[in-house]
Image (cartoon, rainbow, N blue to C red; front, side, top):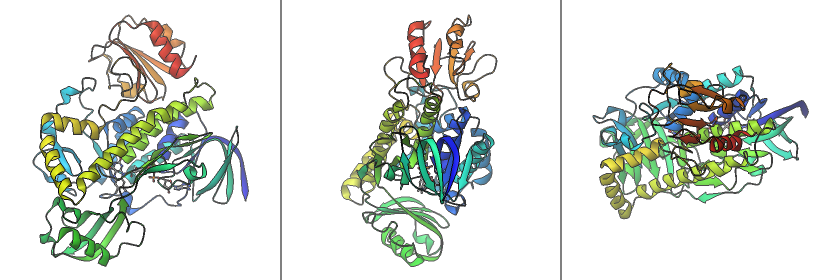
Length: 505
Ligand SMILES: Cc1cc2nc3c(=O)[nH]c(=O)nc-3n(C[C@H](O)[C@H](O)[C@H](O)COP(=O)(O)OP(=O)(O)OC[C@H]3O[C@@H](n4cnc5c(N)ncnc54)[C@H](O)[C@@H]3O)c2cc1C
């Protein structure tokens, strides 16, 4: 076995979207990063539309924008996705998303309820996994990250100073190891971190097929006495078969099996003549008991799994990476204030738990039972009310996601609005260098001396905001969360202590 002599600041297991985004964040903050990926070739038809399409929520869109990555992902989304492949794209009303397949519509959503969101940040972007990974890989490599493919991590040992691990027949060493190696994370298991939660109720199927007798199927999503089917003509299907998750990973999905499950769930006389593509998944919902064990951390699916219902997993994982990157980089540089790294798990574990519960609630509504149909009828009524539609939009889009950063202004713990200044600069562009940001909307700029004390870690922007929401000063962490906000001339002691809390002395 060959031994690499390099000691990397961080080794990341897994070049999925979360590992790649974290690598970009660490590299931006000046760390040396090695990414080890098990697969030789990242390409897969399951990373392309329709099954590889991922809906990006507001926090993700904002994070990508703050790193100058959104435009590239949007450009690829526009050129590669095929309009009309999904049933929802053909409807007269503009859908905003769904809860267990029950849609909410833009014409009912009251965006006035989000006073700290500026216009233009709600809605969503759908992009292929392949595009997201390609954009992140290019950024990571351009910023000096080393990515080694065909190097699956088999295990590791850690001391007080470093982690040593074996991958692809070689030994690598890093000061820190982050497991972004997906649902069956080797890193999580080797670290002995418990992964607990609820067991699956169904096997989900995503399939592309040629069908005979497809007229017997109704387009759209349907709950039946046997489960659920979602049909997008001519041959795209999603099914939920309430078998306790028994079929998932037990055998390959054959044409005959796909046809039998489809007939049973839909009760339609339909024939699968050719099965082009099929994959299964379940609603198992598990979460790591802790996101850190010594020098080893977890992010993304390695830390939490749940059903893809409502499309939250990738967004949750990218949120982990954005939260962790700057904290781990400050720790590597020896500049982190006490407890900074542990605030990662403290802030992100509850966010993950909430998403898992959101997915469980949808399963409760999908069960093939009379009580679930009764529950469905109630949710259908509520989701058509302005309050109901606004509530579901808020949860699904993540518009008002608030991390617990302590008391203070209601904006503290939320993603900063994309304020723009009179000279044309906006927050997203000001955050591209990965530092924190002090926004000073007082034209006299009295806060500059305070900011200058932390110039290496906090950028400073003063000016009159085009729409400052009545605020005078806002301190933003590198991950875009508001650490301090004031709608009066700020108390400099309080602002100074927020700076020390997050950026050190
Ligand atoms: C059908 C479906 C639809 C979905 N739709 C959405 C959606 O619309 N929105 C959304 O937010 N989420 C969605 N998700 C969830 C989303 O795809 C995942 O949450 C996301 O891919 C997790 O990213 P990750 O980087 O943590 O893990 P992964 O994407 O699983 O990447 C992990 C990487 O680690 C590698 N790896 C594994 N083991 C090792 C090892 N031992 N050593 C080195 N490398 C290793 C793997 O090869 C892989 O490249 C969906 C999921 C499914 C199945």
